[in-house]
Amino acid sequence: MNYRDFLQKVIYRIINPVIRLMIKVGLTPNAVTTIGFLLNIVAAGAFTKAALYAGNGCPTSMYSMVCWGGGIVLFAGLFDMMDGRLARMSNQSSVFGALWDSTLDRYSELVTLSGICLLFIKAGWFWVGVATFAAIVGSVMVSYVRARAEGLNIECKVGLMQRPERVVVTAIAAIISGATANLWWLAGGILLIAVLANITAFWRILHCYRQLKDK
Image (cartoon, rainbow, N blue to C red; front, top):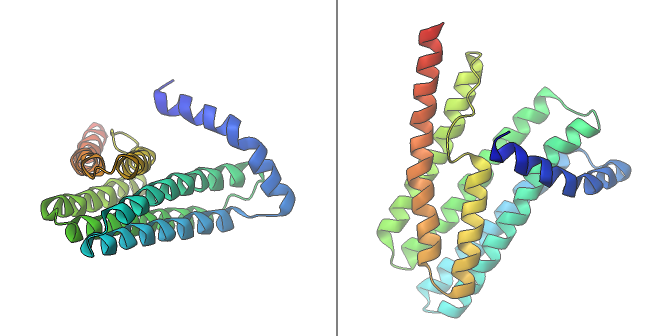
C-alpha cells in the first residue's frame, strides 16, 4: 500500500460519518462538487483581495487574506474528496457526475492559482507570478495527459504532484505565509508545484509511451 492509499483510508474513516449525514439530508454528489467549486471561487476572491491590499501598501491585511485563502482552499479540498465517496456510498455514481467533477476540479484549480498569480504580480514578485502561470500549465497538463491516456485504455496515475498534493501544498503554503507574514512560503509552494507538476505531466507521457510500445 502506497502513502496515498493509506492517507485516503484514514481520511475516509474521518469523513464517513459526514457522508452518512449527507445521505440522510438528501445531498447529491453533484451538489457537493458544486459547493467545493464555489468555495474555491471564494478562495480566489481572498487571494485577489490580498493582491489589492498589496497594491495599496497594506501588508497586514494582505497576509490576513492570504491566510484565509489557504484555509478555504484546504476546506474546499475536503468537498473534493467527499463527492466521490458520497457517490459510491449512496450508489449515485454516474458518467455525468464524473464529467462534472473533473470539469469543476480544473476550474477550481485555475481560479485559485490565477488569484495567487495576481497576488504575486501586484506585490512586485513578477517572476514568481510567471512561475505561478507555469504551475497552472503543469496542473492542467497533468490532468489532460491522464484523460487522454484513459481514452486509450491506459491507466495513468503516476507522478509526484497529482491534484491532492497540489491542493495541500497550495493551502499549507498560503496558511504559513499568512501566519508568518512571509510571502516566501507561498512562493516556495508555487515553485514546487510549477516544477513537479510539469515533471509529472512528462512522466505520464513517458509512461503512456512505454505502455503503448509494449502493446
